[in-house]
Amino acid sequence: MTSPSTNDVIDTVLGLDRFPDLLALREQRAKLRHLSQTSYQAALRPADPRNFSYALRAALAARMAALWKSQELSAHLRALLEREEEGPALASLTDPGKGTEAVDPRLQAILAHVDLVTLSPKEATRAHIEKLLAAGLDDRDIVTLAGLIAFVNYQVLVVAGLKMLRDN
Amino acid sequence: MSQAVHEFTVEALDWKPYVKPVDVETATPDQLDALKITPSNKKISDYVLVLANEPETLKERTPLFNDIMYSEGGLSRGGREIGALAASFVNRCIYCASVHAARYIQLEKRPEVVDEIYGSGLNANLPEFEQALFNFGVDLTAHPDNVGAYQFYHLREIGLDDLQILDLIHAVAIFGWANRLMHTLGEPHRLD
Image (cartoon, rainbow over all chains, first blue to last red; front, side):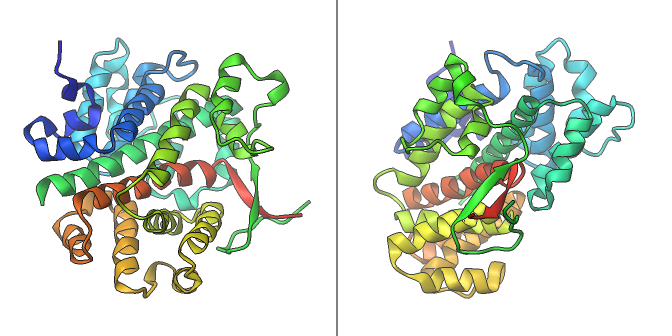
């Protein structure tokens, strides 16, 4: 069994077991800390993954963390991907520097949306949703994808902020 | 057909989705369960009904959002709204900004702070306390990979303790989440 602190993804990626003051600080907001973890579960490992497999979710999430140079989080998400059977096949998606010509049109559209909404959400318009529909995503797929992108970006910001507190 | 709004405004707005909201009449038990725990208004908004397409996520998100924005102690409610506004300005979530500008004014009775943010955007020149909160929200939203000692000492300089800084981080981060839903899954319209 792992200790309670290692069950929390944010504590784990920031190595907070060595920073008891910061663990105690997070404990003052225990409810939101818990809901951040259950939200991670819902985004990355939902009971019904439907058209977004656990492997694809982990790969896309690792890519978003890499886009923001959130190294610790990206490494955690890549490790999550490696534990999936599909992991090796999707590993290249985690690197935003690699071209996406080789992947199918549906996945290409998904990757383009991931990159846009992660780095430049202000640029997003109705036309971007229409591209996803044209690539074969349905309404629920689009909400799934938006929810995954939105959650991982939240987690990137929380990790960045806590890292600032940890190191100063 | 009402007009879509593409510029920041403090007026109350409507929001129209690009994708289908869940129909309450045909919703699944999981969707109904997730919808139940949203703040009980007379009418469930289209925004929440769109998110109900993914009930498992919505069910966690609603209480998380509420705890981040409304929990007791720590950073003031108004301070959290400044964090929300800063994120929404960077991400150009016009709807989010209008809601949280109104909420800030209601809480703090200081419309001049909102006026300055709306007039000057990311270059807003604010009183020292609000300026530090706003700048942190802009920096964390725009460059999460570049937040460190500089931002930290500015927050300390205005007297924030660790819990208040933690609350500000979460308020900004939850709008990194909310903006990416509201601004990408639909658009604001003038009220009919």
